[in-house]
Image (cartoon, rainbow, N blue to C red):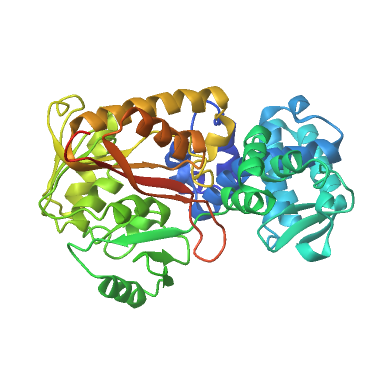
Length: 457
């Protein structure tokens, strides 16, 4: 029985991908259900998420060098080839023979000797056309190279990518497996260099950051625990966040079960830092689940504010209760959605549902789902939520509006329209953060503070 449980990371990855249609479901829960079957959990995670992040680029390579469109390859074989191609391109430290051999073995199990021969032929054809699996970008041609990071890439012996000069949107879309219309919009707004950085950050392996729970510990005490457990870490600038250097199960880190930290990206911590909430405030977190920002509010106010947390998703609202309990927070009341709309608050935190264009490295499936219509629909919901918040914040109070999107129509543009209609509000501050893969890598996002005038004009 024990032998049956131990599967390789590649076998688990293929199994997950066989059941994951990124337009309809999520890889994470599928992976969670199968992780116990392998002793290579971190590797399985990287293979699943890496293959999904880079699927358009991977499929372009498969179609180009096999001479067969991916639609004409049996789905189960295609995912074996995709995982192998991902490793050949993006995992240069893994030996080619090991990648190809196990792919062939998995194909034999899935479909017999003939199918295994096909997988072998495709992967060997790809390897023949790879001239350097880890070449400095300064020494290569853009149309022959798929980028692994900001400095290196996998170079092929043939130009097979769109022309980066003549068709920058098509080129970046193919290389980074992102919708071309989305990249074109970024190019128009942010320019070519910034867009390239956004694309790189959207395909990075995101770092894990800890936000120390100031109610229970200090950054010095928590880093002391990490050092004692021989866990590599860095303190991320002035953000008071700790980056864990080597990937691991965060629930096994020292201090987790004692509620001494929360996992949160640097950018996601920005709205509460920008708001600077004070003890004694009455605060509503209107879209609270799973509670990462709710608990940040409580910690930032020394557990001495009155915080109401609600969310339209009652199932996910249970996660707020779990998080506040683990962190030992007492100032948060979790209330069913709709029971708070007659109250008045000093502040409303409004972390609205959005397109996730700032967090594409983490929310992999979003790139396969977003379109103009979806974003337009989300912007309408965001506007409605903003009007709801405006009605229940006290005169002299504040709305902290935030998204994990970098689209203007969900951020600055939306607030401009709101301020035209609601002249009893002023824009106190706003901050757009573009995702970055450099230094202390981080997601993208937007935060703004709207202040309600004490008296009507």
